[in-house]
Length: 410
Ligand SMILES: CC(C)(COP(=O)([O-])OP(=O)([O-])OC[C@H]1O[C@@H](n2cnc3c(N)ncnc32)[C@H](O)[C@@H]1OP(=O)([O-])[O-])[C@@H](O)C(=O)NCCC(=O)NCCSC(=O)C[C@@](C)(O)CC(=O)[O-]
Ligand SMILES: NC(=O)C1=CN([C@@H]2O[C@H](COP(=O)(O)OP(=O)(O)OC[C@H]3O[C@@H](n4cnc5c(N)ncnc54)[C@H](OP(=O)(O)O)[C@@H]3O)[C@@H](O)[C@H]2O)C=CC1
Image 1 (cartoon, rainbow, N blue to C red):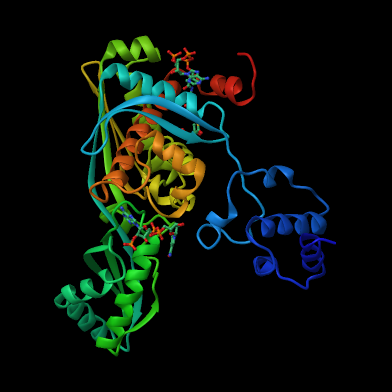
Image 2: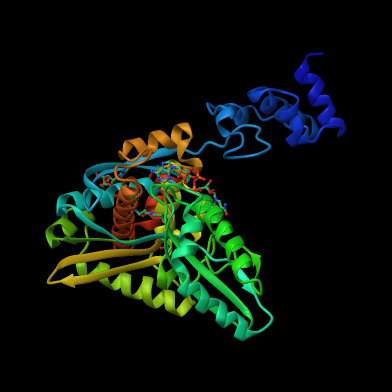
């Protein structure tokens, strides 16, 4: 019996924990043994999960635990899209990983129309990643005194937090009080990283310092949900999280008619009655748009972003105006959380996808690559919105999905 079979047997008998297989076998052999053990325990086989180019040595201790292989999702491209932003300037092909037939075609057609109209203008309105620990006190008065103390000692707190990273820069601390509890919403610049590990480590250091200097304060949790990570919140909407970004374009009427078989008036009506009125009637909050989530999720998967952050990254607003037959359209995304270093961005296919847009790795100066990525994503979201509103206005949605989602001739 070779070493792998021996370890597999022990895992199956419960003598070795799955995650401790790494202590018995090197690198990719541990992945194989874990997969074989799960195959035996479930009576199923997983050759597709096992077929991956990912080297476990690159993943171990960084991206995932109990690894037995990888998931694969089809990746297509849309574009090019022309962007005129502060960071993204020029034409870009955009990678989208999805299993929803018609989605890439949809974004692709939107980009084609925008190309005819001229470059999409984009702007990063603000940039900062947040972490909000919750502190508790004996009394509300103590809690208030604490927030006053924090305000007057900002520079020292900043020094302590920033000592943990060469890229984290503490911009501000917004306090929120409820009775005898206080949340401090720390906001940092994080260079080209999305920044969640960076700001968590920095804020933990700041919390220890605050408890030392203000002994009546007790930090209950470094994340007190007012951050708000992987959850929608009014705080994120109003103050922003990650990058707050806007994209806009003006499309002449003849381009709408030639390429989309529709008019500004019809698109405006769909936007108002569907995105805004329908959203309001249904009680939607923060998502007065058609399908930001489609484009955000597909780019996040392709480029190694934290997919759970699609929750707040896909909040936002589509605004349309009929300007004498021409169409003004903009999308505003208050909380787009993206990075070009760290997390999943270093994995092989994800890094290649980032390189397609010229944003792999750190930028010069730091932060410029992540902002460029945010601008390109906002332009892609604009293309998706333009196209879907248009397809709805001409009643093409079901037909397109029968053809490209079910392989039917329509
Ligand atoms: C499917 C189209 C684009 C066809 O559009 P079309 O105009 O009938 O097709 P076409 O063959 O004349 O092609 C026009 C252009 O579309 C693109 N295009 C066309 N086919 C492809 C393809 N295979 N691969 C890549 N690109 C494609 C391409 O740019 C092409 O230009 P060309 O390059 O030929 O000069 C159109 O019917 C359409 O956009 N339909 C709507 C589909 C859509 O937007 N789906 C979004 C997902 S829906 C969803 O998930 C959310 C939802 C809807 O539930 C949210 C809500 O509640 O609103
Ligand atoms: N910890 C948590 O609470 C949470 C973690 N996550 C996870 O966090 C990960 C992302 O965290 P994040 O902090 O972005 O990534 P990393 O933890 O990978 O940190 C980024 C690293 O890149 C370095 N770096 C090198 N060049 C640059 C540059 N140009 N700009 C910025 N940093 C640079 C940083 O240096 P330096 O040492 O100077 O900082 C830091 O070491 C994801 O895997 C995500 O899933 C998600 C949500 C919550």
